[in-house]
Structures are given as C-alpha cells and as structure tokens.
Image (cartoon, rainbow, N blue to C red):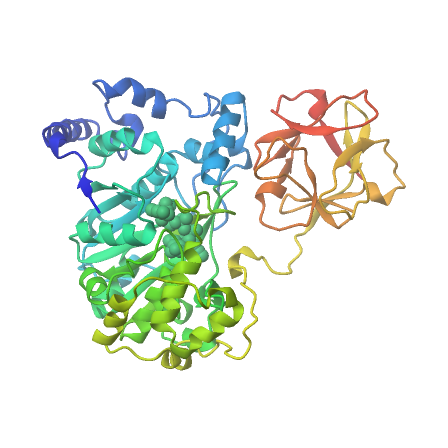
Length: 593
Ligand code: LR7
Ligand code: MN
C-alpha cells in the first residue's frame, strides 16, 4: 500500500493561511463559529469555491427551507418537511444523481451545509459534569469511498464543533481511492484553508476497502484513543467524553455510542432506542433488546451496557490496545464481517465491549449500499468465512448449515489470525456464547436475518388526523386505485367522486401517510422519482410515504421534493404525476369528509 499525506509541499501556504485565518477570526469575533461562508477566500481557488459553496447549492431558492434550530429537549426530527423541495431542473439533477451515486438525498444534504443544530437525544441526566476533565486524547479516523462531499464535511465539522479541542488530537480522513473529482483537489483545498491543521487526508493508491482502510488510518494516528466513524455521520452534543471515560478506567474496554438515525430521504435526525448488538447464524449483525440484568447498575439505563457485538462503524478504542489485539484481519476485503470479528476477538481475548447511552452519534441509514467491490465479489461471504474459520470453532457448522455452498469455498491464508488467537490465549467460542451471549439459540439454525430493531416501529398505528376523498380542484375528480385498492404496486388515477364509495376513502395520519381504504399507503419509488406514485404496504418510516397536505392545498411529497399534479384534466385516463410545485390549479387537492 502506498499512501501519502496530502500536501507536504503546501506547508508554507497553509502556515500563511493559518495566520490569515487567525487574524480574520480575531478581528471578527462576532461572526460566530468559523463556517465556510465567513472564511475569506482568495487566489485561484476562490472562484470555484465561491460558486461551489456560497451559492445555494440547488439554485438559490432557500427561502423558507431552513433547518429549525433544535429546542432543548426536542428529541424529534427537526427539519422542515419542505427542505427537499425541488424548484428547478438543477435541483432535480442534484437529487437524482445523488440518489444514484450515494443512495440518499444529497440535495437536502447540500442545503444543510456543513454545520447544523441537532436535537439533543440524550437522556436529560447525561450531564457533562459526571465525566473527568482529564481524559486521553482522540484520533478520529474516517474512511470514505465516493462519499457525498457535503455529508463528509458535515461529519468532520460535527466533530470539530462538538469536541473540546484539547481532547481532539486529530481527524484522519482516509480516501479509499474515491472516483469523484470533488474528493480530490476541492477537499484538499478545503482542508487546507479551513480545518485548523487538525485534519489530515491520507490517500490509498488503490481501493482497499474499509477494513484495511481503517488499519491504514490507525497507522497514521498518534492520539491515545482511536475513534472510528463512517463518513456520513454527525456527532451529537458532548459525545466524546462518555466514550473516553470507560477507556481511561480500563484500557481493554471498547466503547460504542448509541447510533441515532439520520433519514436517507429527509436527513431528519431522530433518536434510536437503547439496544445492543447481537448476530444470527448467517453472521449478520442484528440489534437485540437489552436484557434487564444489564440495566441494574447505579444509573440504570444511563450506565454502560455490555454488548455481545458492535454494528462496526462507530467506536472508540485505546490505540495501543487496538494494535495489541491484532487490529483487523487484513485479509478481509471492502465491506462486511469485520464488526463481528473484532467483537468476538475483544470478548474472547480479555477485553470488553460497551455501549454508552449518553454518547449519541447519528448515521445516515441508506436502503442500499451505493457501491460494490471492484471485482464484484461477495466480500461479506469471504470475510465471514475467514472469521468463522478463525474464531468460531465447532460453531462454524451453524453458519455452514445455512450457507452450505460456502463449505468448500477458499478463504485465503488465515495463519496470521490464528497466531493472534494463540498469542492472546483467547477463550473458546463456546465460552463466548455461554458467558457473553447466552440468548443465542444454538439449535435453531434457521433464523432469518433480522431487521435492525430501530427501523421497525412496531405495531403502533399512527393516529388518523383526517379522512375523506381526495379531490383535485381543477379536474374536479377524486384520486382512486386504478385496479383493486388492495393491490400492492397498483397505480392511482382520477375518477368521478362518489361520496358513497368507500373505495375512495383516504386517511391522513400524524405520520403524514396517505392510506387508501385503511390498507395501503401512497408511495413513491425511491430510485425512479419520475415514476408516478403507487400504492404500497405502509412502512412507517416516512420519506417515500410522507406527504404534506397544507393550507395551500398542495400535496407535497417529502422525499421527492415535488407536488402531486394531474397530467391532463380533460383526458378520461385521469393520470397523475409528480411535478415541480408551482401552485397551479392542477396541483390543488382537498381532502373532503
Ligand atoms: O471500499 C470501501 N471503502 C471505504 O472506505 C467501502 C466503504 N468505505 C467507507 C464508507 O465510505 C463508509 O464511510 O467505509 C465506511 C463504512 O461503509 P458503509 O457506510 O457503506 O457501511 P454501512 O454503514 O452500510 O455498514 C456497517 O457495516 C460495515 C461492515 O463492514 C462497517 O462496519 C460499517 O462501518 C458499518 N456502519 C455502521 O456501523 C453504522 C451503523 C450501521 C448499523 C447498524
Ligand atoms: Mn455507513
């Protein structure tokens, strides 16, 4: 692996800039925290940067779509639902290519910019005062491959904005050979101009994957504790000290925050319940409820919770302990499996893995991974095979029972990893199951991979706010199912309104869902936003099924950023479509009881 720290040659320039920036900020104290907008930019970069970052990214219609500052104690999503409104073709282009390349709403991400307030999702009793002031320093390591620029920079700035400077030793960005142009020079210039000398960029010459990527980042780190983050996170209020304190008490402790949810469609930030990590015999990570026995400490649900596994992306660990424990398995490629591998290793070899509910870090949960591996291999299977062969003893049979095709699959040389297990005199996998994860059912090998608990809102039905027919004011017709109202995937069209026809009845609920005949939700395809809406099973997580129906009579679709419109009011076909909101009659709807 060849890599280079970026811009040795620019040292002189960066010193000059530091002085300029220092002068600038000492002369303009009242301008608040340094944000890109108030940094003076000059020289050849100026023009490109100014047009890139100081104009409204979506074309200049920012009025009315600001993030609402989070009130203290407000733990719900804090964004205007119209943050993603599309005003012109350029917005549409940003949104569509964003979904295609990154699988989340990049238009909203760009509009949010690099700094935003977040709702403080911690329990009120999580006070700063309960942590020692003197703590080990942190090196934050963030690997990225083709990340959206605004999401990456918001990750970095959230760390800079919410971490006491004396605890933040550095931030190391590992570019895993990304292919997007703005992650090269623009990123270098931005880091050099704005990031206080605390941020380093390491570039991998070829794609290594997140596992070797993190090892490379860690090898450049010099702080006492390593903190790994994904490149689309936002750390919340006072996030770091609760992670560092348990490590200071016991250096063989690895600590995870609670991973809050940033919606891929709306970028709204919302709290996750307190759950802990487990896995199934398919070697997929899953969330489990916290057993009551873990909540009995002096501070109940506020104290650290022991977790059998970690999700993988967000954790803090003493740097020397990371090295002693064998870092990661460098034979693992691209994505997958390393989280269970390091979890088993921590517990089996004398450490412990904790989740601390007073530390909160948000993560953008996408519905698909927007990249593959260079050769198209299933790296999850390859990596899982390696971990099964090194760590799972006879229990690897549980995995092979589910994945018989992998029984004979080659997995490369694992002797170095077996030597780690030998050197550290680790416990058996049976010990791990008996002691750390007794909930795991060994007999039932047919567990399906489970959904993360927090994505599933359970059986609670949101309250219905209004019921009635949905009439288009221009066509004077009502929105109905084209076929049977119970048919999943069915289209919706306009037909003559009929007050006695129950098949025309929509319910509008507090989650902003529109449900036809109490059965299916009006839904947008996430990938093909130009497709007309259709009827789908209600998923309860907003976004593609979230509609706002306001006084203006427009029916605004949150994840698409457009309004429901009639295609042609005269045609008997009654087709509807999504269109840029323009307030015209063809976009006016009324829910009539
Ligand atoms: O080839 C790659 N090179 C990289 O640098 C592929 C990815 N990456 C970067 C990527 O840009 C990102 O910053 O590595 C990071 C993680 O990749 P994601 O965001 O695609 O992973 P994920 O969030 O889908 O998956 C989770 O599981 C992974 C298993 O390998 C990693 O451990 C991720 O860090 C992990 N993410 C989390 O734990 C966040 C919470 C998710 C949950 C539950
Ligand atoms: Mn991620």
